[in-house]
Image (tube, rainbow, N blue to C red; front, side, top):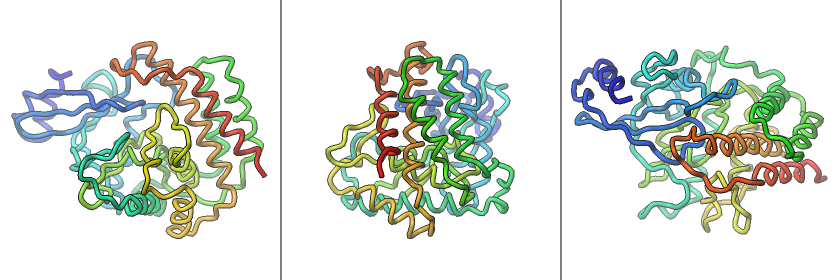
Length: 331
């Protein structure tokens, strides 16, 4: 990898110091692989898919490249794309290099000296999600970035296909959740740019002000129903006393973070969205993450995650799906 990257970076960035580049894996990425590239000229970030056979429509580097370029002049903070290779000529797989945005990524613990006002951090996060959902897609050149009509129904079908591709049998709760969701899809009400995996640890935070310096991980972005993003954010947002999801940080259980009800109210205030059917979108988030969890479980076992180990995931997809079924079963 180094032999190919050095000359390409030197040419793209106009600095021969990049000819001598060191790469180190940034642990924690559960889909695409992220590397920190260092040289005497500084530091940049490489994104590429995992090793092995890739699932259909997953790990889309070209999508990440396009949307981040399109958002450069928007209110949504994103890293700059420095080198794009959507065709895979450089490393044998599609990849790109982006700027290293200053700040911290908060996963399992707050770094020392982080601001105590966690409510302000949460409000900044919600305001950033609202900014994504109010991007003028025509102005940004993203009007053809996806087909929003029928978005949720298509997403349910897509994740059912992903589940079949994972090849796991016997987890009946996932199939039951998919069927229940297909019968509960509300009428299409809104169209927006959708991130696809918006959560706290996909953002770079300013440790002094708790503002959002950059939004990362755009591989599932598209045009669609913005409530799918809100539902996923609420899925990740665990509260005190709730059991964490094994593959998602539960830092929001820390005293000082607001509850999901406040996140929901802030989002409604910022966007004016109709949240009547939010429960369905939250249940969909459970389906999506159940499939992702089992896919990662299979990939770790096959050695496709660069040696990363995410612990024993046995039964986790079923637990997530059963929680989603509980949501749809409530009055």
